[in-house]
Amino acid sequence: MANTGESEYPTGIPAYPSAPAGNPTQTPSGYTYSNLQQNVQQQPVQMVISRQPQQAAPSDYLAFAICVTICCCLPFGIVGIIKASEAKNRFASGDYDGAKESSKSAKNWSIAGLVAGCIIITLIIIFNIVSTAAAVNNANDYYY
Image (cartoon, rainbow, N blue to C red; front, side, top):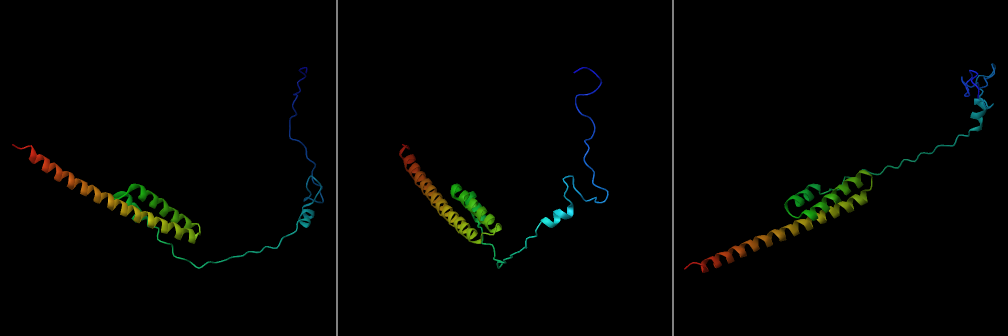
């Protein structure tokens, strides 16, 4: 294209047809807003509100699970903490039955961890007593 001073791209704002002076609500496509509103049909609105009686949150046994994790048995305690958190989240989302189930599961895992921890600690104590007694008996053998 020869340099004639004109740009090959159009400049300026495109012109849209203006609304007739008598009807300022007419759109560029020719429909008036009043015609558009007549074509829209309103649907009846029904709102159903069901209220459930307020239920108390089931115990989540989180503190019990944390104590079991720290003091007794780490794996069982971690599962107990996860289940306790799940019980709290399910109750917050409105799933009361699921919250009760998770709460019961958290309690069972925590009790299992407590029992396992007590058994392990008892076995360690017994092993230490037996090994100390054996060491004392063997130590007497080495004196002349």
